[in-house]
Image (cartoon, rainbow, N blue to C red; front, top):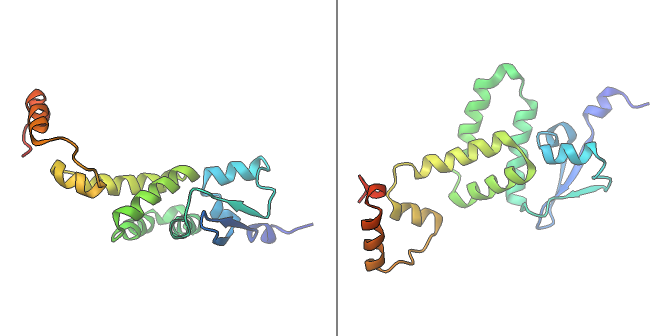
Length: 161
């Protein structure tokens, strides 16, 4: 009969889309509703759980977040908030997008919320040209078409250049 200490040390292997494997403690993996549901329904009977939509770099970030949140006690909420802010502080937009996609796929609500909020804060109060650059959106309007759209929807552009 396994002791509860052994159960707490149980590990899972997660495999990223680019083939890298991560050995992770089960209580850390259970921060993900997707993984929790897979384990509860025995969908993960394999030795390795593939995560085909998440690359190794992003999965390492996700697991770092999950480990910190799994190991923190509820009395350390301020410490977690500080960690979350620092965790995302210097992250580039591409990494943030990948993190949002991974958090959504793995169903990690807290991570999804803070990553999406960081993106929203980044584009807040920026002119549309700058937002286009951030999201790599090409302006496919001719100057004449853009002027016509601005005129038709003047109310939407009030206060913006």
